Structure formats: structure tokens, C-alpha cells
Amino acid sequence: MSKKKLFIIVGLVIFLVVLLSAIYFLNNNKKISNIDFKDNTINEVASTNTIDNTNTMEIEKQENQVTNVIQEETQESKENTEDNILQKTNDKQSASTKDISSKNSSNNHNTKETNQDNKGNNTSQSTISNTNYNPTTTQETVPPKVPTTKPETTIKEITQEELTDEIDKYKADIMAIKPGFNYVYAKRGYSFYPYRTKEIEIGVGNVTFGTIYYYVEVFIEGNQQKFRYYIDWEGK
Image 1 (cartoon, rainbow, N blue to C red):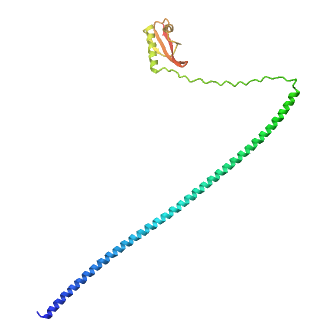
Image 2 (image 1 turned 135 degrees about the vertical axis):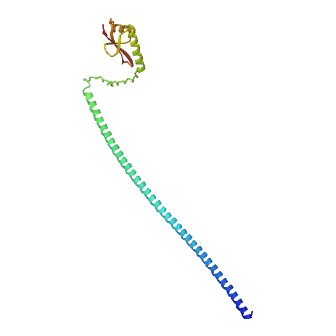
Image 3 (image 1 turned 90 degrees about the horizontal axis):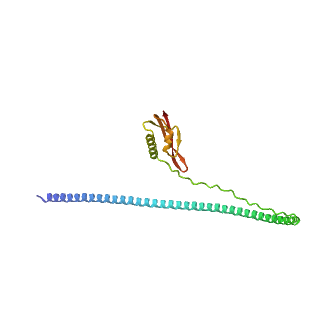
């Protein structure tokens, strides 16, 4: 191989090395630029968000201050209005009290003068008609008697069970006195109370057959319920 060819080969190798190195550095610089760009973008976004948050907080702070000022002014105005109303009311009451006091003083003065005049007149009349004085007796007014309300009395009531038992007892006594009759529970004939078997004998009489009507009624006497008995008959 000649020296000329060797130099050419070495030159090509060097050129390739330089070219590859240049490409490598260019790629690295591009990546670094992209990273820097991204960092700058992130920083700008963060800065923008920080500014927005700061502005929002400032706006809210100002709004709260304005709201507090409005509330304080409203409260102060309300208190002033209430104080004015209370003051006016007190003034009216004071004026009314003074007016009433003045009228009372005037009435008392007039009453005093009238009493003095009447006293003088009464003294004069008493001196003139002293010989014809006739004492009169004062009649006391008796207050009307207040009627006393009677306490409500609780009526002792008869239960349905007690009524049924009394009806059964009444029928049993009738059947014992007059057996073999037709017995009908109906309200007719004459009534009696208190309970006596003698009344049953009077009620059915000397009948030998037919129908006997009997009935038990509840009525009120005093403060309790009682039984009244009915008896009647049909037959011969």
C-alpha cells in the first residue's frame, strides 16, 4: 500500500470520528434545550398560579373587609334607630306622666277647696239647725250571699254483668213462685222496688196458666244506680 492511500484512509477515519462527534454533541444540546424549555415552562406556570392565588386572596380579603364595614355600618344604624325610638318613647311617657301629675295636682287642689267650702257650709247649717237635729241610723249594706257550688258527685254505676245476673235472679224467683208458665222479658205491667218476692206474688195473682211478663230497669237515685222491677201476666 502506498503512503497516499494510507493518508486518505486515515483522513476518512478522522472525518467520520469528527462527524459522529458533531452529531452526538448536537443531539445532547437539543435534549438540554428541551429540558431547559420544559423547566422554564413549568416555572412560568407555577409563577402564574402563585400570582393568581395571591390575587384571589387579595380580592377575597378586600371583599371581606368591605362586607365587615357594611355590617358594622348597618349595625350602628340599627342601634341608632333603636336608641332614637326608645328616646322618643321615654319622652312621650315622661310628658304623659307630667301631664297626669299636673291634672292630679289640679284636681286635688280643687277637691281641697271644695271640701273646705262644704265644711264651712256644713258648719253653718249645723249651727242654724242644731235645735232641730234628728240623728239618723246608718243602715249597713249586707253583701249578697254567693251561692256555693256543690261538688260533683260520682254516680255509682251498675255494670252489664250485674244487670244480667239480676235479670236471671228475678226470672228464677218468678219460676219458683209460678212454675210452668211462658216467661217473656218485656217492660209492661206495674213496677216496684226495692226487691220483694211478695210483689211477684201480687203481680201474677191467682193465674194458673198463661204468660208472665217481667223486666228489670236501671234508674238513678241519689248518687247511685238502682234496679226497678216490672211484673205482669196474661192467662186464667
